[in-house]
Amino acid sequence: MTEYSEDPDLAGSRGFQSLREGFYKAVFFTFAAATVLTTIAIILTLLIDAVGFFAEYSVVAFLTGMDWSPSLRPVSFGVLPLVFGTLVVTAIAALIAIPVGTLTAVYLSEYAAPRTRAILKPLLEILAGVPTVIYGFFALVYVTPVIEFVFPGVSTFNVLSASLLVGIMTIPMVSSISEDAMSAVPDSLRRAGYGMGATKYEVTTDIIVPAATSGIVSSYILAISRAIGETMIVTVAMGMQPALPTVQYADVLGLGIPFVHPGEVFLGSGQTMTAAMVQIANSDLSGGTLAYNSLFAIGLTLFVITLLMNVVSNIISERYREEY
Image 1 (tube, rainbow, N blue to C red):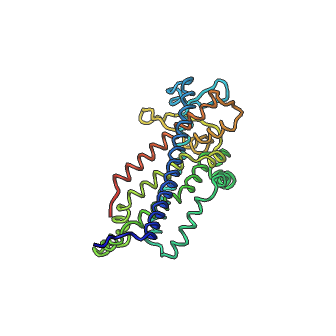
Image 2: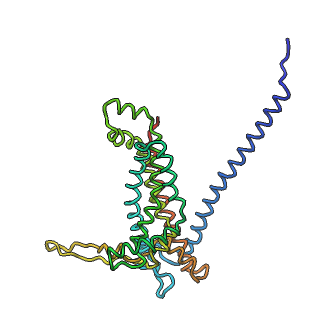
């Protein structure tokens, strides 16, 4: 009976391959661990300094206060004006980015010729590569004068111009992710729709878009999260004056209906949470003071809001994800 012996060269090759695979695994694990550790470090940094802030200032007063004045006496750390400014910018940006980005994605995925798509998509994604400070100066120098021509009473630093550019900046995120989601829908579904006599419009709206809902909605959430965290555009074009609009009352059928004048919301200056953080970081406030630690309290609030947005995105993606 002949005993089989493995070729030494083959055994050595397998040993080298195993060693190489182990090296790759160690490298990938190192980078994955570095990402997790960085996230943990950021959270701990925010928590430690934010806890120090809330040890001296009430959490309730911080979350419900209507005045933000960290450096002027009497100091006040009500975050509501900053949250309001952030939400207004995000809402206007979403009204621009979501419809424009979605329609662009539909065109690139379903209507554009392959050559046209190969040209237009990279050109569109160039918008994502433009430094945000350039968007800010563009809003201040070019967009604001146009708004001033339409609304003569607009402030030089205003919410509307900053919000418009934040919306334009986030269009590539919506269009690119949504287009990828639509392109991932199998062609068999398209052919089935055409086989049933559906038009291209009906196939797009009744088959492709519903099938890609998971990716499309995820692009919305990610774009909104990006708008919430935008810093340079709002810092340059929106100003540094946090304020809540004045609630007025209109007499309708003898009832006092509360309302807010749109001009006060959109045409005046304001401040977002990110811009307030930049202002505190660049001020002459000493580290360790209550005013300086408020920076981390804002950061923690912004982190929680963004985290909730991402959780919602994941829930929606899992809820409407379709396997093909």
